[in-house]
Length: 68
Image (cartoon, rainbow, N blue to C red; front, top):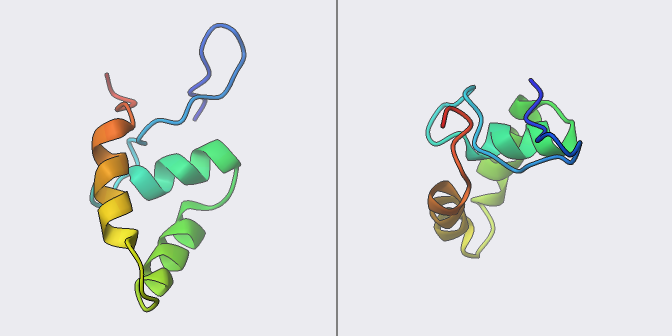
């Protein structure tokens, strides 16, 4: 999927290929990696202390939706 604007630059948007909010697959599209890898890394990072869930929720609200 190509979410490029007319200027040819990549945009960070929530993907239509979503399980919860589309944040992980949007990041995967932006960086050109497999969405499953980003999802697995996110779930694995939940084992470490830190604000991972809070960052996910913030990105869910800040990142524009690809469907819009």
